[in-house]
Image (cartoon, rainbow, N blue to C red; front, side):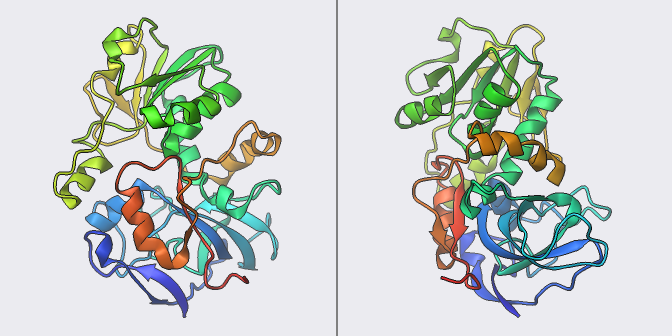
Length: 335
């Protein structure tokens, strides 16, 4: 058995408890990884809140992790014991479409070889854990929108987990000619530091006031009634959460694609973009991570200790995180 955070029924963060969970039995194509750091995502909240995806209970939440390979199946060819790796371990496009019962908020997890990449040596376990799901989602949006080198992009929500990476990818990977992003007043300088050419403070500027029109509108937030933030409102008794997405489509050029990573999309003109879960995507970004062109953005309140997972979820569910909420100092980790 191992220490893990788990829930036995769907509901608010209070259904989570720290307990014991069986160690996984490896399949031939899987690695056993000792988790050194994990990151939380709005998706983890959604599937805990209600049964929107097939998963067996009790379940351990978590998609993102970074850690060390301690055992490998007979069919493994790319990795060895002792390798430092990172991955999004949850692939809903698998044969049965089910999510893993054992997520990443545990001491050890099992993950398929094709979902894993070696961790760049110049980044920490915490930084690596913050990347997979968000960067895979960010890249899928550009692919869905048919984005081309030299085009312009407007990112709604430049300070969030996906937004921070969308801004950096637009600038350094896709070589956009103009990257503009929105955020609130307190985060303007932070988003500028990511490489945005211009940052729009949505608390002070209306979309209709912007003169530029863009080749791609990339909405990483969605509307308050169609995204994760709606769940937050229910849980926090209708507490107001700033939402800067209404009418954002007015900044797009005629016939330019509007990409939305929330379901259902935030307006009738938006195209929903999901993600492809693959270690190859992470490997493709290795040169950009090693050169420092692409950097992980971890919320300054963290990393949270393993025993403080409920508090970490509470903070994530406020909708105010800057970058990713990360968990580290796992029980099996030598201190």
